[in-house]
Image (cartoon, rainbow, N blue to C red):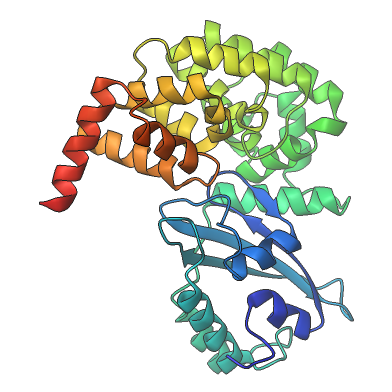
Amino acid sequence: MTDKIATIGEFLAAGNTEFQVFDLGRRLSEISLETFAAIEHQQQPHPFPLAHHAHLAILFRHKSEPQQDYLWFLKFPLDERGLLNLAARDQYLEYVVSALGQQITDALTEEQEEQLKHNPYLFTPSETQRAALHARISTQRQAAPSQYFDTTFEYLMGKHSDWQHIGVQGLHDCAARLMNLPELATAITERYTDYAPTVQRYLAEALEQHSIPAKLRDFYLNELTEANETRALYALRALASTSNDKRLQKVLLTLLKQPVDANTLTVLGARLWPALQHNELLECYLERIAELEQPWFQALFEDAASLPELRPLVLRKIAQNDISAEVKQQLLQLKARQTS
């Protein structure tokens, strides 16, 4: 890298662009430019690691052509503390500079497109990730939603029953706008049981990516405690934006006082991890995952220990021997497997 440009942020600034950074790994989360700069300088860990990687979407446009957007989907390795692998980041920048030079918003030649395709740090987002991002961007810009919005809105409002044509993007467009659509939030609480099971599932996957109003929070809290196992799991996902809500934490604590299936624990650790900063919740969570088979325990324990918000809490519990005999046994087995 040159002395002047050492980071992605500096490269984009030098290209005279305006840009935003989003993490797509766990939930759709925007990362401030100040935080992103600190991550790129290893001044702080990446806040949302998934499988020891950062899954980023970088949206940018040239200041002279604000109507034209560009998107990079990037996946970078992180170390055990969650710090960005600078060698990988630097290699990515070398690929881009080699292919594009400083004109990063110019039309690409076939040769440039081919060069960029072989960049090992690109990733293809899932349909859900892409839909959530596009819904967030259009909402932020107060732009029109996708062509699927009207049909989806009308279905959720109970105006038709043709659920097979509403589309994942339409659900995300609705979810991203719920704070400004109180009539839609009311309709979901009143008509939820009439929705097709497939819609209930994909609606939950959309809601977990966006903030939900209090009316929906209360509805899904009730679903979490009263509905069948499948719908309770959907409710847990839908409540992902409310992890710090005291009522939810109380419900989660009651839930974790008894044996819990692996799918529920996975959603809890992957989507509602901020709730686990509560000491008693973390203690119960570790006890519940210790009841699972070793591969499940290893995956969920290592995931919790990779999160910057949870890592010091988990390590402190181990250092102070503030863990149950079952957790201790699982950790001993895990250590034995890693050293064998």
